[in-house]
Length: 283
Ligand code: NAP
Image (cartoon, rainbow, N blue to C red; front, top):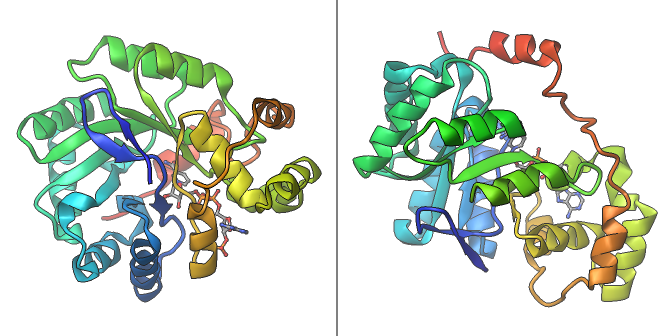
């Protein structure tokens, strides 16, 4: 595994394992145990995934020291605001069963996230969190937060995959030293990505699957990727990307399949803002 250094000097694995949509506690615990067993050290969960306890249990029983693992969880919109954030963090850390967290992210660019950010800055300063960041922040929201915060976000976790490459967002993140992290790194399997002819052709050249080509492309451009799968065989496949390198030409060919927008979620739409704000994770 390779590590990147965040803007506050903290090391983070460049590839990890995500647990979105693995709500069944037993299945999630087993998946995280399998992921740690095959070598993943970064686990990405969220309060809104309803599986923090299962992640915590798997970490505890793994026998791997806590310091070797890098655990991320996220703050939901309903819990934004200063006091709410402090409370939500306490709830998450209790569910995970840890005494500190590696990375805490604002899950959505909605709600009272400036006050949340102040609370997260305090938690980082007090040593409860090693790094703080955001998700799904558009370029202008990210720049605005960077310009109005004491701690610059370490991460912006956004949708990045060959069909939605987000080059201009990546340029802004580079300018502000915010590390990009790809959610949906495999396009959530949409648009039949695993049978995409361009990616299949490149894979054949290197003796690698489409998933491996995509994940290699992600890390070769310095993006942290957190693919999800419930199958141990695929977990192994997805992490087995360290014995080949895509040529500059193949990286260029992959750039050519960008469709330039998301077909998963549209953050520019008011419907998305309404829909996500309606989604409650507790009473
Ligand atoms: P993803 O990782 O792009 O894709 C997951 C899909 O690909 C699943 O259907 C999985 O099926 C399939 N898959 C995985 N590896 C495969 C392989 N080698 N061959 C064939 N199929 C494969 O999508 P994601 O789960 O949405 O994103 C990853 C993580 O990002 C999440 O788990 C979560 O931690 C995070 N995330 C964050 C946000 C946010 O707003 N911050 C949003 C979405 C996701 P099987 O499970 O059946 O193998």
